[in-house]
Image (cartoon, rainbow, N blue to C red; front, side, top):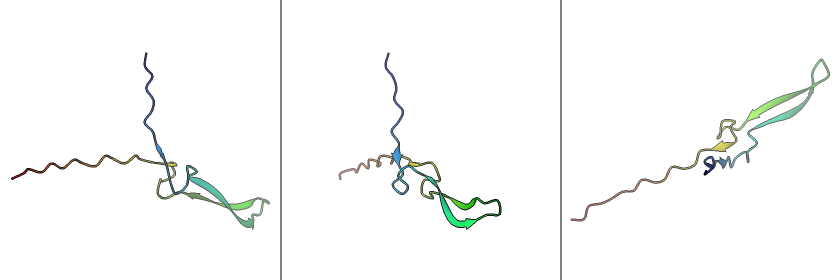
Length: 64
């Protein structure tokens, strides 16, 4: 019996598949932990992948 494979996904070229990162600001909070910022990749909206491009439509012209 044949096995179906999932459609290939493209890794986001902007984040290389790592859509969320935590950046240390260097500031210490009152409890002793460091303040961090969670940054999400805007082009892929935090998914790490981009949709595959749709095929270009075929245009047929009539010859006169």
